[in-house]
Length: 292
Image 1 (tube, rainbow, N blue to C red):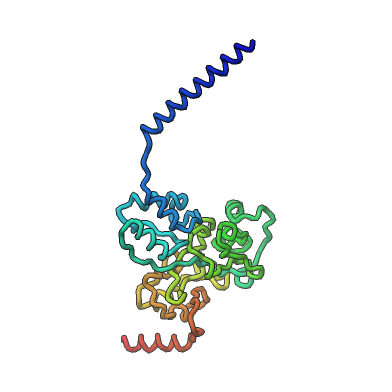
Image 2: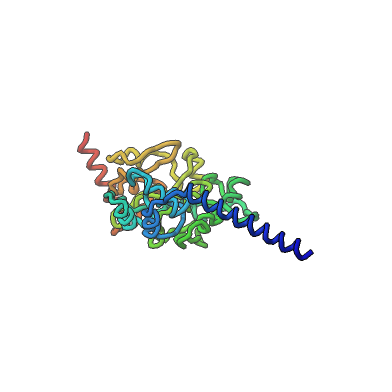
């Protein structure tokens, strides 16, 4: 009986050794040499693995960057231009700087502007809530207020305001990774250019209903009147489906659209002075008079 056990152990050991040798030889024969620059780039990246670059993680980003002919389609939003300069240095190429971006909420449906008409008592998830019904208010496009964006943000840049029941974005923490954009089922969060000294203009509304219905649902909604579109001299505003949209790549921050908006749907952020609507409207009137 003892000899049987011994022989079994010996045979299994030999078999294991043979298999190990075979695996070693196969691994050696089919070994894929990895470009050492991948490790260098991965070390230069912040290691957030947030997916904001469009890749599964920092390692995947590094591998793709090494294989690509240039870095035009690659950008790390967390590390920004400084990190991308390091990546470019590893690859021995030059890269143009990109304007920093930040997330903005295209909804101003606070409790004051958009009164609640019912109470949701289910799972506190915007995604689930959006699938069940149109929301707690008359606006079927507005923020659902469950904070999916807060949970998605890895950098603590978003918090829910208990008074307005809307998410607020901390500019000092936002990395423009886009996680909140992907988390919002109603696509109310958008990445926009941060703007010079943080100044920017955007339409804080996503309601595509006709004016009277949009106004009934929220006092601060865009009603599609076209005042901003007609006023803008830079071609920065598009009016589609009863909703205005400002193209930040064309906007010159003149604030004329903000001054003429009858509902206050257009928001100007981080401007050094408060908007003097009367003065701006007077300037617009003089320009139109001169054009006649």
